Image 1 (cartoon, rainbow, N blue to C red):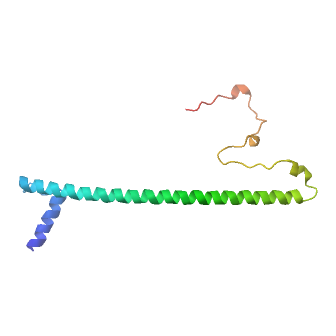
Image 2: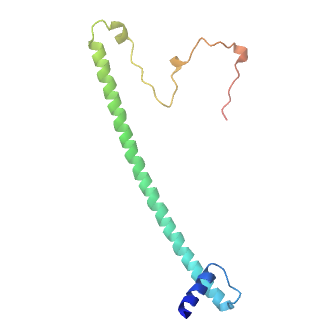
Length: 129
């Protein structure tokens, strides 16, 4: 029973409870133990964070490689489709127009409606901040 009571008191002290009964020496000892424990917790946290960062960096490279592979596969498929269209007789008009490929980072200009209903007075300049 005494051992259980001592462990419970120690837990209370670690939680910052029931400190009034401790002497200055006991308080310094508790503070030292808490600082050591806290440094071990921080060290473990940093190890975990670095491991997570390393994993994410590897995952990013894998995703970039997979993305490049898929882009190449799409380009290959588009070229094959264009070759098939070029071989179809009577498809001369369409084959003279070069295929358009769109970069997802840019909005194609030819898709913007040039016959807008607004006058130049209604258009306001946009400023990038």
